[in-house]
Each structure stands twice: as C-alpha cells, then as structure tokens.
Image 1 (cartoon, rainbow, N blue to C red):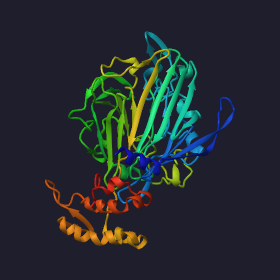
Image 2 (tube, rainbow, N blue to C red):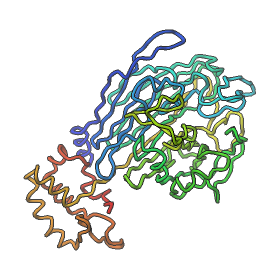
Image 3 (cartoon, rainbow, N blue to C red):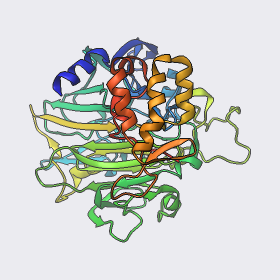
Image 4 (cartoon, rainbow, N blue to C red):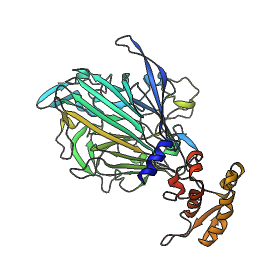
Length: 472
C-alpha cells in the first residue's frame, strides 16, 4: 500500500508555480514592492492561488459532479481591488487580532492597553492597518509557501514585537492547509484567522445559489453579543435556536431570520474534548453542483459570516456602472449581500477581556510560540460514468473497446439495472439506485492502470468505487 502511494505521488506531484501578481506601494515608507502570486495544481484539477499581499487566498478552483471547474473563492483580478476601500477583508490573513476588541482596550495580566479603534469605539480585524494591508515576505519549501511578517512593538497599540508565519500547502487529497505560527517578545494578545469568502456554486453566483447551500457546524454554544457584535462574556446554548446548525440545514431557510442581524455573523464554540487538538468544525454542501467544503482546526471557535455587509443589490444596480459602493471581483462579477460565506477559525472574540470557561490560551507570553492550524478539505466530487461518457471515450481511446464490450455482460451477471443511461447495482441492505457498482472500476483498473494514472481526469479511488455515487 505504501509503495503504491509513493509511486502515485512520484508520478502525480502537486505543482507549484510563482509569478508576479502586481505592485504594492507602501504609503508609510513610499517603497514599491512586487506582490508575488503562488499557484498550486493537484492531480484532481484543484487549483489554489495565494498572493503575498495580506497573505491572501485569491482563488480556489474545484470541479463539480460533472467535472466542470469553478472558482469558489471570492477575490479580485488585480491589486486595485485588494487595496480599494470597498474590499471587506476578502481572502486575507487577519491579525494581530481577528474579530472585535471591545472599546479599544485589552487587559493583559492586569495592565490595560489602548488599541486603535477603527469601528466606532471598537477595533475590528487588527485596526487601521492590520496584517491584511501589508506585503508579506516569503520563502518556498518544496510545495509549501511560508509567508512571514514582523509586527513591531506598539503596532496598532499592541505590546511586543510579533513575528508571524503562515504556511500554505495543497495536497493530492484536496486538503488546503493553512498553518499559523506567532512568536512575541512581550505578553500580548494574538488571534489569527483567514477571511476567505466561499460560494460553492461559483464566486459570482450570488445569494440565489448561496441560499441552496446546506450547512453543518459542530458547535453546541455561541458567544453572546450585543447589537454591535461585542461579546458580553456569556456562552449561550444553541439548542432549540436558529443557531443550532449541528444538523445539516439549508441556509436559505434561516439566513434572513437572525434577530437583529442581516444574516449570520456569530462565533460558534466548537464541541471537542478538553485535550483534543485538531477536530471537525464544519461541512458545507452545494447540492446542485455536488461541491463540498469541510473544515478542521485546533482553534476553539469559528465565526460564521454570510457577507451581510456586501452591497445590497438594488433594482437599478449594474456591475457595469461606476457606483462607488460596488465590489467588483474577478471575471467582471460584482459581489452582493449574501454572495458568499466565511468560516473564520479563531479564539473567542474579545476573549482577552472576558473569563470564558472553554476558551483556549488567550495571552501569548514572552518567548512563547503560538501554533494554530486550519485544514480546508474539498472531498472528491464523483463524475457520473454514463453510457454517453463511455462512448465519447471510445472514440478517442480504442484500447477501451474490450472493457466496454465486457461491461454489459458483467453488469448482467452482477444484477445491475440502467436508469437515464447510467448503470446501477443493488447493494445488500441499501435502496436501489443510490450507488454505482464498483466492478466496472475493477475492470478498468486491472487492464489500464498505468494509462488511467496518466490520462484520466479523476483519481483512481473514484474508479475503485470507494467514493462513487451517482447524481440521478
């Protein structure tokens, strides 16, 4: 098994390319620097792009259940979009402290520090110049990219020189890994997250498709907040409330019913054991496309945000207009209210100012290392094996003729039946028509493993039937 896995990795390595995304002129220093873009491609046609400005995820392309690839991450085509005032932290790394800091003050070991207040009396996402507004240094380590940033003592009011590393990596298992590390010279408050906006139908498909998403979050409590989203210090049970997403829930059935809010913008307290590290956070599915996003992390909470403050599309609004409030993204698409969702892993918001029984360590001490880890998983979306699809393959691949000729008779022996051009098989203890028989995959694998390994779009595991399901 290990030899096979190593062989597969050898012939199907993840590819990493680097080029220039644009130029960034630092208004403080007046210096101009190249913003680098990194593009990963794996064997499953998943493509991810990250730029050094803001250590920002700009694009995630994933195939659907028909093999069609869409970019599911909101983003901009150039630096102009990322530096515009209309950019609402799209795709970036947020720090030094993500989310709110109530009344612009933090209490560290009895000492009060005043931090910058960029949201009325409060601070949001690190202040006026958070980590999203700097061009990070970087180095490459194989197919990993490590971005680093130095936040000096008193930066936005926070004590201590802080060195932050964010490591990005795409695997052939469709995991996109984001690893945060921070080191300080003085006790300080650190709460790092990634602020990507997702729409599994496609980044420009808007609220209509977002409402079809099915969301499940592994949390039995939320943090209580006031009308300004400032935590009170209390934890509330989700049981019997609109925040109970422990059972998969269609987003459109709830998003417009959140009391006092335009949608979800709340911290969910993840359910896990006292000593448990990385755990399952959330699963989101877009049934029409079959795309899935699963999230795992070692943080205690996740902010579920449904882009409530993107512009609301009016009757006369058009992406072709020059209205200043528009958020114009990639491919000429405009991003509107409820056009995407965020899952921002984090410590509980404003945790440094409250005593929360389930919080993780809040204050980072002198010479101490903070490590947090996010795993975004895009499970393989199966491609239906229809008769038409096989016939198209036969036109280009004569070596499949023998297998195709054997398929109907083999299917007959296996008690298969045909629906809409697809072969199905009754499995013991299951209802008819819900899964494709794996024996076709076995035939392919026995005869054409080397050819499949180099020429076919979908991974061998799909052909073996491990994940094969058909969308009728």
